[in-house]
Image 1 (tube, chains in turn green, red):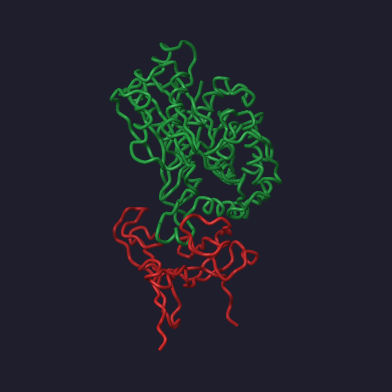
Image 2 (cartoon, rainbow over the protein chains, first blue to last red):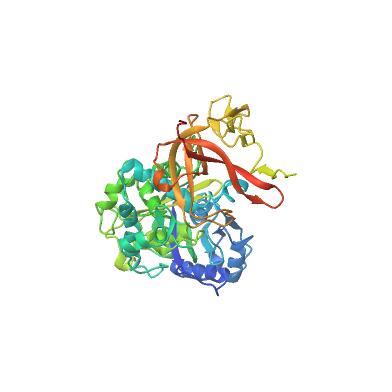
Length: 375
Length: 143
């Protein structure tokens, strides 16, 4: 297996673009990544496009605007882990030695769609209104609050933190602070999750260029961000809990840590899947940032602030940076890459050398993707 | 002459109920004959051990409220009034049933409380008539 460098990253600011075609958003993300990498479309040997809702051959519809060189193009769908899965496919293409330079794109346009329907059984869950994501996570929140004594205000503070972080992220959909009261008083979706505790719908695109480390050094001497570990995973059967979000996260992360040869204690920055406030809480534990039931303490101690021991979601996370579902995984890759290069501006985590990205998608089944980048 | 209103189950094979109410309803699930795991809805292959030897079983009609939520913003396709309550009831067999929670105010619900299965109306369908589904309500001892 060859060592793989993240040669370039780029994204468009997430938000609402009712009058811009998704193909153009994707094209702009490609331009940003290619320019950051210092390569041209003709240098790309294989390309992947992660998305959920955009229809057939979405990748081709974007890449055909950039260049038409006949390279293999694959479209990757893994619910909210589509973008990350696209990245890991690109990684595997280069690490295997089969391709030299790969591009991974994630795109999504959700302006015209509402809540993601996560129904496992359309004929039952859909008419009974039981299958949507906020419902699933609201029930996880209720149980967690009962088991570990987490209050509504403490839960809401995840959103306060991430919105505050995004003030310094020019690519974030929202870039303003919101108070605890504003979070708690925003419209109730599914108790206890209020509107500002749910990631927003939106449009966006992000991309990364990967190549072997040897080739990266020839393109540009000096140190490069490299993929130190990565893993994808699906559900292991858990009696009575088909949608357990912690078990899939921990077994996937475990394999990424093993590949890296280190553990969560050696991470300096994390971008994890805070689709809802409760998700961030659960994933602190799933990723091994703390022990079971200790997520509340980790959050309240300030450890996951940008100046804390293990900053989480310095970009603003899904809650504030936005969650155009297929694009999110690559926005996380871009953020960690910028953090490791010292290019994160006012949201820079000092001395970041090792960072982790984590996405978790769930529809009829679940997909998890974890990457560890180092420099 | 009064016409009996047409009724139909939301999906065949999920639950048994007698319209007259003589017998209490139960959910119909599967048990893997190799590893013993139970499933609802029923299956033809075990996702735990992949065995194809599964037997149909009647599941317990009572369980504990594992979690719940009150939904204020309904997702697309929902056919009912808002707000409404959805929860998971953990049966003694181990399976957690995702179901509407009915005949209860949110303030009456407690995690861990005993719940019992009822069959009730989900919505009206122009062709099928009254569509029935499995639901859970707080278990109340009969006086």
